[in-house]
Amino acid sequence: MRRTQLYEFHRRTANMTNFAGFEMPLWYKGITEEHLAVRNNVGVFDVSHMGRVVITGKDAEAFLNYVITNDVATLTENSALYTVMCNEAGGIVDDCVVSRIAKDKFLLVPNAANREKDYNWLVKHVRGYDVKVEDLSNVSAMLAIQGPKAEETLQKICPEDLSKIERFQCVSTRLVNVDVFVSRTGYTGEDGFEVYVWNTSVEKPDNAVKVWNAVLEAGEPLGIEPCGLGARDTLRLEAGLCLYGSDIDENTTPLEARLGFVVKFQKDKFIGKNALLKQKEEGIKRRRVGLQIIGQGIPRQGFRIYDDKGENIGQITSGTFSPLLKCGIAMAYVQTQYAQEGTLVNVEIRGKKAKAKIVAFPFYDVEKYGYKRKTSV
Picture: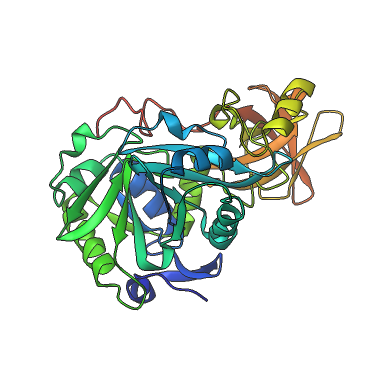
């Protein structure tokens, strides 16, 4: 079992779990309390189990544009984008965020379960490109400060004016005399920041511990809570964000997953382009949708979905009880003709059929919650 730089804090204060081979906090005070802290105030997550790969060199842009579907040529320095990497069949190798730190320097963040796989995938395809691929996952840490009070919290210890950093923009700076890279990104649907702490290993975790403690202290008057993977999962599901290995994988294409916005067909070439063009021309046979249970019942991964004639039309990939909406919600794939918003379907839950409605992502009211919210907190 692997550990992050903040393991000792988690061990003392959290209920632990195994995730992707890491000993990680599942919850501290409770999933619902931590979830609502992020929706209403601010929470901080240790996400150091995720990967951090730095790509440098004069061909860095061209190389990345070959291995990802989105277009890094559109990135100015200190900006980021969401993307996927595909195999030749168009299946998703991983979804990740790519940031441009400098003209010829990029940071790619793989999912925890894909750290080695993604690094090996990049190295496999690097031939012919003048680039250097470095896995810095073991000598850096990563924190996520999320929620409507995230900016106010982080601003207390950050010398940069965070109000000038827009969503998917970044900055290299120092927090409590520690070198960090800060991006206005996250995995909760809320406003917030991801902080990459350099020069900190599991054996020498001082820099990570210093930044973590400073964030908790800065956020204390604002109601900050340390948050575990339980709340991270319910938050991302309410926001309609995919979990690799559940909602997307190498047998799923970005077009089926409603991630077509990260596929830039105008690029000359990228891995999987031909397969995705073919699928686009032939038509998508299934689509990722949101499901909201009408009445009682909590949908779970693997539960089947039926039409009103009793025909199996799809399957749930992620499901939970929404702490915000107080009902069961799920992410699923259904046959395309059933994917329209408002369609009523049946979900088999413990041998019984529960009514559900296909809804748009995110599940919550965007005027009241999330980074687009119009209500003050």
